[in-house]
Length: 117
Image 1 (cartoon, rainbow, N blue to C red):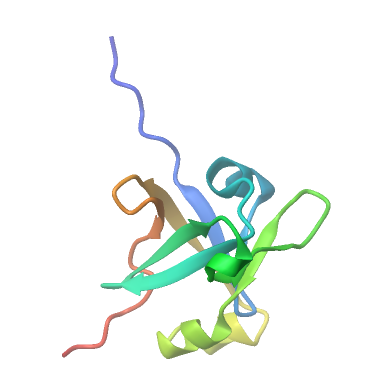
Image 2: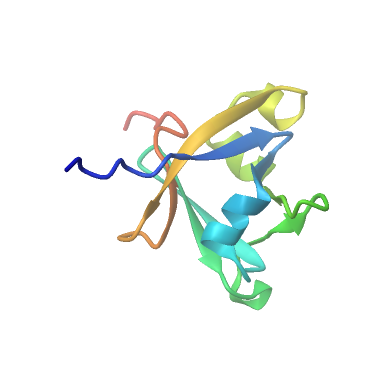
């Protein structure tokens, strides 16, 4: 008997200052949520579900009929020193994320370089 393979990483795209989630990713991890909280922590980015906009966080906007969502956070990404072309230009970056039960959200490892103290 072989051990089950780990789940495939989830792909999150950063383009024009927004994080973009496919409809499938939204349904799998954030179904019914209206917003997410984006928390930078030790070079990682945590994407945590927020049930209602009144609870805070950033709104998950529907961007197409497939149910893809985006969350605007250019100011946060600029503070983290991310590539300006990903924020204002036509460039984009794809990041692998995984669900963390301990954090109760998606985690993108090595999302940004932490400044040396």
